Amino acid sequence: MGSTTIPAGTKWWSGGKSPFNVSYGKVMMWYFLMSDAFTFGAFLISYGTIRFSVNHWADPNHVFNSFPFAGHANLPLAFVSLMTFILIFSSVTMVLAVHEGHHMNRKGVEKYMILTIIGGLGFLSCQAWEWTHLLTGEHIAMLNDGTLSVLPTTVKMNPWGEALSSSETMAALQKTSHEQLVAIANTLHHGAEGAHHAVETLTNQELINQIASNTAFHATHTGPIAFGGYFFGITGFHGFHVFSGVIINIVMYIKTKLGHFDQRGHYEMIEKAGLYWHFVDLVWVFVFLCFYLV
Amino acid sequence: MSAQHFENPEITFQPDHSGGTGKIWKIFWVLSVLTIIELALGYFLYAKHGDLGYATVLTTKCVIGILTLAKAYYIVSVFMHLGDEIRNFIMTIVVPLVLFVWFIIAFLADGNSWKNLRNTRAGSRPAEIEQVKAAPAEHSAH
Image (tube, rainbow over all chains, first blue to last red; front, side, top):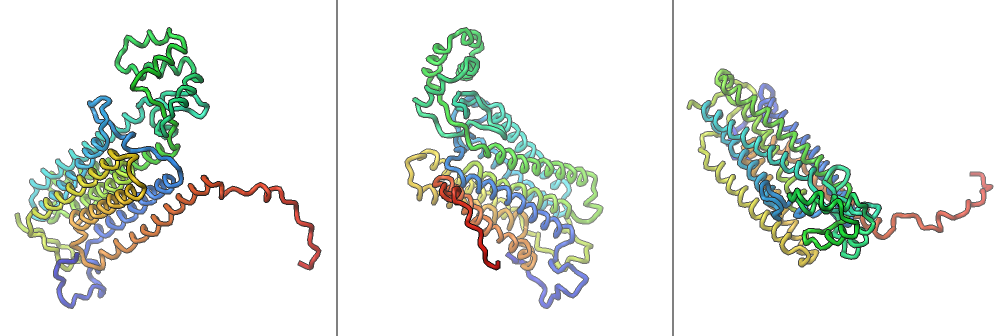
């Protein structure tokens, strides 16, 4: 750090210049990012506190094990790795845009800003898919009244509790209503449209036998109630930062294209947008750690 | 490709930007390799789930956390160019963030304490205290 040679005898605090050798706008961007770091930090630490306070937390390898177009294949860590590499790569193209800006190379800045914007949109698309997948997911879990139900992952409930033992599962199946048994049987028969009408005419006991003999059938307790709120809250807040970062980058691209920075004589606005964009990547590094890895 | 020149009187000197993109790509590979190691450790925890002792799991998670901090350092220092700023400025950013050390220790310990209280009922009031009779009124001058 501080590798640059500072002119000997510089009086930083005697007025007329920035004591930090940084323009006002950049200093304020840094301080904004520092305050934003505390906001994200508070969210993540609050999540950690609640996670430490319960005996069972959702296992990320079970929650996030899908990949687009891979059906029900069990692929833990795969999709989030893709998202992470998209964001790292868009950070690289951003810093390359800043580099081109230092050399007053407008074409280079334009090229790398476009790539950065594409990376940001790619990340947002991945997040949209992941949220949709969780919100529309169908997993069988035991509600508080002891009956089984088909649950998605929302801010109110989720199916990511501990697995039920086989005796608990059988007891819960016996209590479950006909309607829910039909829903469970249909969930297990995913894709087989013809099966829908067939299961509705079965008796409860026939349904229970059919469900219990299906190898894909396993039921869990409902998961920690706070999981959905923290996951959607924090990744949503981060996703909103990515979204606003993409908007800022589009504005910067248009201003570059119009030659505003050439007229101004410097590309410092690209640096400031870059600081924000790298911060988004930096936060993701910690979200990735807290929600997916550990 | 003329060099950038600031008219800004606030800036005493410009950091040296004459270098190529070699350092950027080097840091890209560093970040990628660190991420791959993290993923490998995460996958190790998944594949060995249930077979590992508490200490091994905790150690692995701590290693993943340290690798994350290393990634954060490279992003901030090189990609955000904070490493090129003067020392006073770096300190105004970094020193306040040290508060996180205490936040993390204090809040995670608190969460852990809640769990212990819940599991042992140590936080609930013993029944005999609930039933205690009101003390006879004192007649002292107080």
